[in-house]
Image (cartoon, rainbow, N blue to C red; front, top):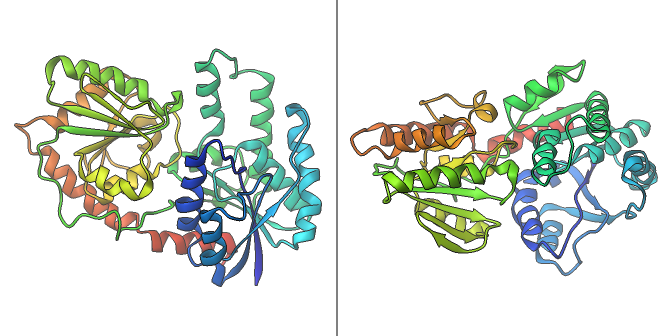
Length: 378
């Protein structure tokens, strides 16, 4: 039985929601029954404590062994190569056969895992959550720090290319990422699209929505790359003409109400189906993004989604199973109006097509099987 070692982000008890999302939902949904086919180790610089309930569940039900590796303590300019030196003896000690990541690791960590795996003659599978360079640009530049065109940018561009070249397989979340990464490797055929999928016994609807469409939902971080500010501006414009149309923001927001905008803070995974059921449509207007679960969860419950054109136009079809928006409030207002128009039957029709597409495309069990085949090269 082969041994897969996953290199994962640190546990941080100051941000329990992040670990809960990974430990209680993301990791189980990816691992599934992989323990029947491989030994599984998750290595971290800081693992969760042995008493943590999500750790215990992963160990008990998913066959995971947690392994602590040394905490890096060196300048960021030399981080990638120093991480390689830390990983090499660990991979030898663990007698790994495959090295990969469950979470979409940042470029430097993927580079270190790729180089260490190749030096050991191991299979390396790179799972890419999204365009890390673009995400960093939005985060840094929103805070007034330069990034695009800097030495850091060019160093990360090079290390991403090296990691992609060294990988035996690359798992991406969207066809857009597949196209982007195809430009930086000589083996584009090794890049495979594999969504994470959703449990459609939990996120389900027996029939499409009939309308009216009045309650829009945003789920995500209050961070520049997520485009929450674009939706806030659009919502203010809608308030002036259609005060009965409302917007809920769930995520890292302070709770409160402003005009037609309701901020409810973080929502636990178990409460998400109820949250979707209380709304009519979902908006994902991110500037940079992988393939968010919110799209698959909402669509599996029959909620039409308005989403960023530049991110998702290769994965969906305008008017057939999605509505696309540019990243500006004016265009977003127009798409909101299409769904909220009481004189049109477009909303229930799109809901019906959305539900059919989700049932055919996002089943967790089918996608889990595809993921395991890529991981184990069978």
